[in-house]
Image 1 (cartoon, rainbow, N blue to C red):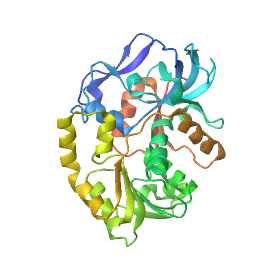
Image 2 (tube, helix red, strand yellow):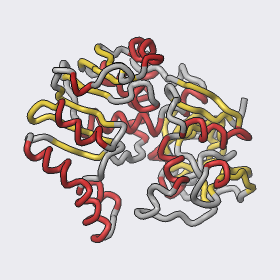
Image 3 (cartoon, rainbow, N blue to C red):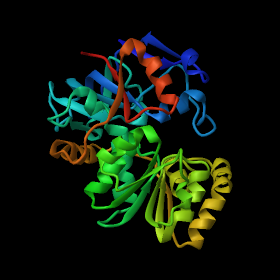
Length: 335
């Protein structure tokens, strides 16, 4: 079968190549999916650049991509929840990474039936971003009705879902975006929009129960300047906290270095009696099923920027890496 593979760290156009690889084998509790569509996430181009090699080195060549939708072609002998021919989607386990491929293996427990009202391309836009938002707002932030949340980068792949899920939960949503994306985030339900090309969100007098940091860098520490006492900062781009470091199973030296980098953030959180958590999303078929219901009811709608063919998958990732995508970037393997 054909699969997009990472050959080395570095420039996207030189580090990736479509190669022929063996068809993956199945364990008893796994399913083989014939890929119809897959999607990229910022995590993918960051991995190719080598942003995480100090934490976890790759053994080249290695597959890329974590989101997939398609049709089950084969099931392991212990699979109970699915049958051959089912239309499914998944955020596959890290040990199985490589959804930019003609066939993908997924654990049964990481898989769900695609929403009945969505295409394969639309379904492929959901898993990683959707689970990230679900686990951030529901599991960690534990948002409740009428709370105020600031969502950075509301027009991005994560932001577009976060606005909609927060509104579904009954929250009052403020988001940052550029001038050209104001109408998009307004349609998604944002109550207040801050155009970062014209104004600084720190100048706003509002205080928030939750700040959802999708940008990292100075935005993580600055989150506490607009946070209510006792509020929650959930980040998917900032410094790792001790809980996340343990989840990753990092050694003591790396954990110590990461703790030093995060010390200002942890100090600020402690001073404000606030929660700071870096969200390390984990695959979860049960939560995908819940997300599927929200898409079927129309509470959340998919937002897709561009769709590419498989042979243009490198260009798709390059486009995403430029930071201009509104919603998700999809790679379609079967028309």
